[in-house]
Amino acid sequence: MDSDSEEMSSNSIKLLAGNSHPELAELVSKRLGIPLSKVGVYQYSNKETSVTIGESIRDEDVYIIQTGYGEDEINDFLMELLILIHACKTASVRRITAVIPNFPYARQDKKDKSRAPITAKLVANLLQTAGCDNVLTMDLHASQIQGFFNIPVNNLYAEPSVLHYIRTKTDLDNAILVSPDAGGAKRVASLADKLDLNFALIHKERQKANEVSRMVLVGDVTGKSCLLIDDMADTCGTLAKACDTLLEHGAKEVIAIVTHGIFSGAAKEKLGNSKLARIVCTNTVPVEMDLPIIDQIDISPTLAEAIRRLHNGESISYLFTHAPSA
Image (cartoon, rainbow, N blue to C red; front, side, top):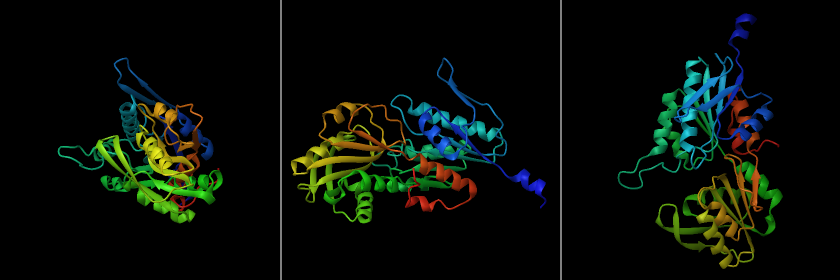
């Protein structure tokens, strides 16, 4: 193969960003040293979404950064992502990867009652129908969601970044990890192993979805600094109640660490009134709360490195256990 045709076949990364999290897209762009492509995403007066891509992307490797976020706009942002994927498809790109740090509708992943929809599967079908070739996401609510797709899904973990945070910014010698529910026990056990710490478990009984009625603690937290680990904080009812339960059982302080800080509804009020010493989340979704107890972990280096490795055909499993240096 002569050098001319080799040059023809090489392609470059094009980064496109939707409107859901421009700050994260900017950080990824800076980290990769690749500017964001010119994209106009706007709404007509009747609220229909329209997309224009302002530069040639023919035969390029396209990465569209759009996260599942927004109390009012979450469906608009999902539609925006689908239209962006379709626009890229019709512009003859070589490959489209949807970078979705927080996968929308991930909690609707099973038929937990009669006539319930499995909306996560529907979202997977929509992405594939729009023309997506690859999905890059972080800390899926349930790993099995990867099985809803017929295309490769790379589920990254915030765990390496969280480990680094715990080691450098908490009282490790006197710490105990706590899972706020049985579902997160596996995640917490994995962290406890790596940090060589004990862990406790809270069993919660729900009256109805999103509302916790009673909590039972399994394990001893007396005099300990409790690190409450979860994959997402939405209305924060679980975290606030878990914090009260731990303090009632003699905990010294409670720090909550979550991957996706969604903070919808009355979350600000609940966190403001809670006895949490700190709530730490990553920047997979924008956090628009100015509470002094909130701290953030930047995961843009992980996303940027995953994009670079995907483009170059390298393994990304290294990122499952290592956080790139900030």
